[in-house]
Every structure is written in C-alpha cells, then in structure tokens.
Amino acid sequence: MTTKTQRRLRGGMIGLGFMGRHHVGQYEKLPQVELVAIADADPVRLHNKATIEGNIDLPQPKINFAALQAFADGRDLIAQADVDFVDIATPSYLHAEMAVLAAEAGRHILVEKPMALNSADAERMIAAARANNVRLMVAQVVRFWPEYLYLKEVYTSKRLGRLMHAEFIRRGSRPRWSWRKWMSEVEHSGGAPFDLHIHDVDYVHYLLGEPQKITARHIVSPGSTGHDIMTAQFEYPDGLTVAVDGGWYAPARYGFYSAYEAVFEQGIVRYHGGAQPTLTVMRNDTDEVETPSVSGDPYEAEILFFVRALQDGSDPAEQHPPESSLAAVRLIERELASA
Ligand SMILES: NC(=O)c1ccc[n+]([C@@H]2O[C@H](COP(=O)([O-])OP(=O)(O)OC[C@H]3O[C@@H](n4cnc5c(N)ncnc54)[C@H](O)[C@@H]3O)[C@@H](O)[C@H]2O)c1
Picture 1 (cartoon, rainbow, N blue to C red):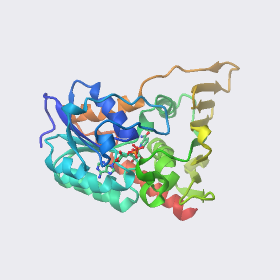
Picture 2 (cartoon, protein in one colour):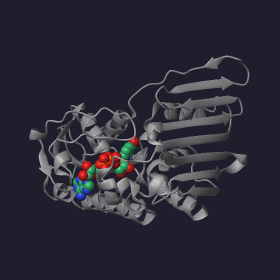
Picture 3 (tube, rainbow, N blue to C red):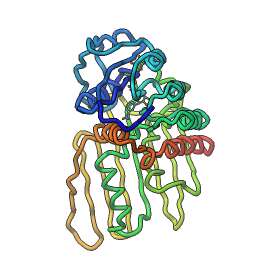
Picture 4 (tube, rainbow, N blue to C red):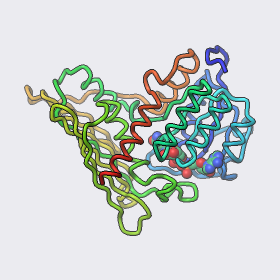
C-alpha cells in the first residue's frame, strides 16, 4: 500500500466506546480523512443508541451512522472494509490481535494505549507492522498534552538548568463504565498499572529514557480483582530520581486527577490537573510566580500527527516509535517484578 496520497484517507474505527467515539469526533474535524467504517461488538453502541461514559470529561460527537459501513467485530472490518488505516480503541486485551490482523491486511494502525498487556504481544505488533510495511503508532496522548509538552521544552532547552527530581501523579475512581466491565478485570485491562499509570511511565521514558533502577510497590485494595495502586521510583544518572504514582482506588465522586512537579536547578515547574488546571513556574531568583499560557486539544494533536504522517508519506515512528511504547510496557513489567 502506498502512503503518499493526496486523496482523502479512508479510515475505519474499531471500538465505539468512550475513547473510540471521541476519536470519531476528531476525524470528523479533519477534511483529509473520510471515516468509512466502524466496528463495535455492542449493537446498541454500533447503532448510536448508547450513552457513553468515561473517566474524563470529553465531548462525545453525534455521528451520522447511516453513512458508515458497520461491522459487529473489528476483525471483520479489517478483512472487509476498504480502508487505508484503522484506529483501534477496543478493550486493551484485544489491541495486539487487532493490530497484527490489520498489519497483515496492509492497513496503517493507530492503537490506543496501553500498546499491549505484555511485551511479547507488543513485539509481535511491531514485527507485523514492519513485515507488512505499515505505519504503527500508539496513542500516548500525554505526549501531546500542552502542560506536558511545556515540561519537555523546559527540560530539553535546559533553561531552568538540570532536572534533579520529578513527581508524577495520576489518580481516578475505579472504572465503572467499561463494556462488560473489562476494565475492572486485571487479565483484560492490566489493572491500574497498565491502564492509568502507564500514561506517566510512557511520558517519563519519552522524556528521560530508560531508568537505571526501578523500585516499585503495588497495592490491591479490598474487593478488587487486580492492581489498584502502583507507586514507583525511577533512578537515573547524576542522582536524578523520578517518583511515579498512579491508581484508581478513589471513590466515585473523586473523578480524575493528574499532576506533576519537576524540580530543576533553577526553579520548579508545577502542574495541577483536575477541573481547573494550573501550570506554574517558580524560579529560585525571583519571588514572582509565572503562569505560562498553554492550550490545545491533545487528542486532536495526536490524531492530526498520525494523519499528517500518512498523508505526506513520512513515518510517525520518527517521533513516536512503537518501540518507545513497547518500552513503557516493559517498564510496567519491571515495576510489577520489583513490587
Ligand atoms: N488515551 C486516553 O486518554 C484513554 C482514555 C480511556 C481509554 N483509553 C483506551 O481506549 C481503549 C478503549 O477504552 P474505552 O474506555 O473506550 O472502553 P469502552 O469499554 O468504553 O469501549 C470499548 C468498546 O470496544 C468494543 N469492542 C469489544 N470487542 C470488540 C470487537 N471484537 N470489535 C469491535 N469492538 C469491540 C466494545 O463493545 C466497546 O464499545 C482502551 O485500550 C483504553 O485503555 C484511552
């Protein structure tokens, strides 16, 4: 399949739950994409009659389902629909199987995080994409989140000097919305480490690379079937330590919260997410507190990045290689082994 094309890219969306449906809304904004096919195992969702819930407040689009070829299984969409790419937002335990099938059918692939629930599956996905010469990108949206892009710029430019310490937090209430409760079942979602905490693990790896040493603890809360809390410390050269803490043990009213604090030689960058996100910079040499203005829809940026790469024939892997998402999966495995 050729990737360099001026015609509209034909896309197929697999999984129309909380995230898949949000992705559909993103494609509808892009004139260079024509979404032609959808697949979902739930007929109510496939026929636009479902109320969709999720962990964060995202707009869910109204979709003109009549114009789309509908499949009851993503595997059928891959085999039968005439598409250039598929976007896989199924439950996480299906990512590897769907991605390998899509690669073998010659479709480019955007797949939601976690890339897979173990590194062997993630390796199979990369090998299949390579063998069939298709693009494979994992939707690690935090890499596109404005406040996290800001931190990357401060780190890379060294304008606050060397990074000495950082903390990343991501917490939510236990997922209650997923299709057939797959998210609450550790064998299907990997629990909080693979589902939630991996966002920060991937970001830390994207920012700093492979840690020299990992120490981690996980907690299974009463009544749970899997891991609910993971708290890890990553050690890097020159004494840099990074604490990464995530979990979904909070009560329902808690909702969702993410934050970081990065301590540089010459100041601190602090982000508090939640309903009213704040980003502040406190420099050692002044009492003034800066509040940098950052904006942008990270999901839009992520999908646009993937689509533009397909359009101009470049490889999204140059900036976001699937190997780096595989590395995040391996880091979670190392954490679990250390815990
Ligand atoms: N990037 C983010 O911020 C973010 C947020 C939430 C979820 N996610 C990821 O998105 C993926 C989906 O999560 P969700 O919250 O949308 O879950 P969900 O349960 O709301 O949706 C999953 C959908 O997949 C469908 N499905 C199941 N088997 C299928 C099959 N064989 N073929 C086609 N469809 C099938 C289900 O019917 C369901 O509608 C997960 O991998 C999750 O980790 C990412």
